[in-house]
Image (cartoon, rainbow, N blue to C red):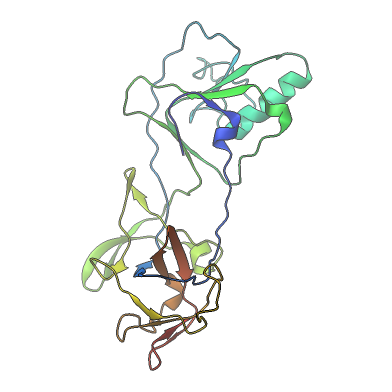
Length: 265
């Protein structure tokens, strides 16, 4: 999520929930397959100027910030003993502490300088965090403060896949099943995921668990497909169905494929 103007605290609460839906009734539905991808983002070097005429007390957040600093300076001071805070969580906690001491009353502004701020856990707020407003600080229109629930990927090496030279990185959490990202950003641009078919969509052949009396909103866990559309790939755990139906986009991890019966579960 990007903060490009003034936001209330409620606008930047994030959660990490990955719902796994069942097959629902697909009337004239399309179907495409995608392969899992990895999410990351690049950080831009901030170049803020100190704002003037701030109407309320301000707490500053910057990629150059450090825990333990006051957050009252937009940039580190000359001897690097004080400056902005490094995260939104740190700004929230600093405001709570200063309010508890009576140092802050009323409205407070949190000013976020350009860069990418990664959330390792949901950013939550309580009633005590009311009357706090968030805004970005930028000299250039293309500079943004980005709040990301993704992770930066490091350890890239050159490798060869199917006779082609590629960049590759091994991710232990993905390998162990603890992390299942769906997006990859390179130089702040989303990269397309591998998909079948390359253009257009497949169509499901039927839903064997469903009949005319089944409610339209009852989830299904099986579907039949046209021969050859879906295969029992060796990396089946990396494949998900993206089913477009009604106004819904369902993302369905594949657990089992029976090619002889053209049945997916």
